[in-house]
Amino acid sequence: MSDKQEEEKKVPLSGFEVDSTELAKKRQGYYDNWRALTKEETERIKAEEEAEKKRAAEKLGLENDVPRSEAERKDREKRAALREAKKLWDNKKVAEEEMKFNLKDLDKVKKVLTRDDIAHRPVLVISNCNNCHLTLSAGLGNLIKIFVDNCENTHVVLDCSIITQHVEVSHCDNMEITVAQPLQTIQIDLCDGVKVRYNQNVMQEGHRLYHAAVKRLEVHHFDSCSVEHDYTDLEAGDEKVPLEERQFVTHLKSDKLVTERVRRASGIMPMTDEELSKVAGTAEIESAHIRQAKEKKTAGNEAFKDAEYMQAGVFYTQAMSLAPTDNEMLCVCLANRAACNLKLGRLEEALDDAQASLAIDAKYVKGWFRKGIALHALKQYGPAIEALSKADSLEPKNKQIQEALGFAKVMLQKQMKEEAEKFLDKA
Image (cartoon, rainbow, N blue to C red):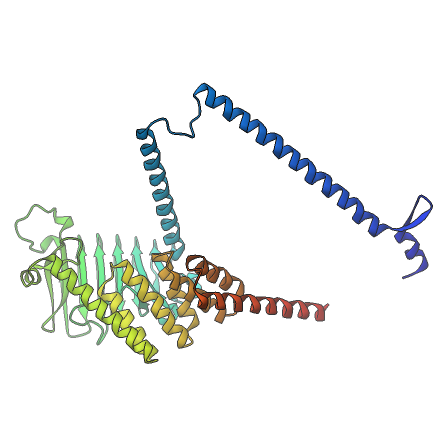
């Protein structure tokens, strides 16, 4: 530093030479203390005023914070519970919307979609697309569900993995769907001119295509058999259900495609008259599905213990397909499959499964834990700490979570230090 710069750094004060930086610090400390004192005094005066208002209101009988009767107390509790329920419902809807990716308003587009195209979100909504050819390949990862709505002259190829084994199509015209991977259920409603083609060895007995109010529907099982019909020509018996609301199913029966009327009962999957006649009641049907799903989940747990992670993941997927409306089953199996994917090094798939689990139950500890571990493995230490902290708050005595959280914090500090060193080296 030159002599001139050294002189400029100091200023005279009462006959002494004082470092200007030190003086600035003292002044700043003085101002900070004054501001803190002013804030404290302002808050004290405000608190006194509020207390005085409250005492005056109590004397006048205007105090509303205390219920004046048992009936008023119960009414307040009821309203508070309703507000809390609404808050939880709103949060759930927000979480569900955050899981969706809306692919819409495309015209004359031919594309093979990847995970990046849908921002890694597990629920895909295709809407308002015209004259397009969209291939949903294995590169999309594990999707939870697919919706296709209001599309025209569009061809969709389903060659991806779908956790719930369910695709919904509605309000489409001149639509073509190619099923290139085994798919349990397709639901088509209120469409005109739909052709569904199952590739070789894809459609199996038990796979179903449900449809209601569909004109000019064609279903082809590879080159072996096909059916064509219009819902207005299908006989459904003498019943009071409006024609547009009557539901049918097209499926394989003795290696032939057949279309039959189906009915719903107690919220279970729709069944044909023949299937309904074979069971004592809807409760028995539902319990059979749940029992089979639990058996698959147990088989998955056993396979995981034996380090057969690939097979365990298959069992968990099967359990979810057997009980697609059982949220608890879906949540647990998704988190368990995330653990399988972690063991197999499929980090992105593990993260998808963990997030899908949390979309069902945002308070599921294992979902947060496996999300945190997946993010840690992907070297995203900041988000990993957030996920593991959430798991720790839900289960504060879990040493495994605490150890993982501590390790993630150490790795984040190390990563930040390395980045800082790289920055200094470049500078």
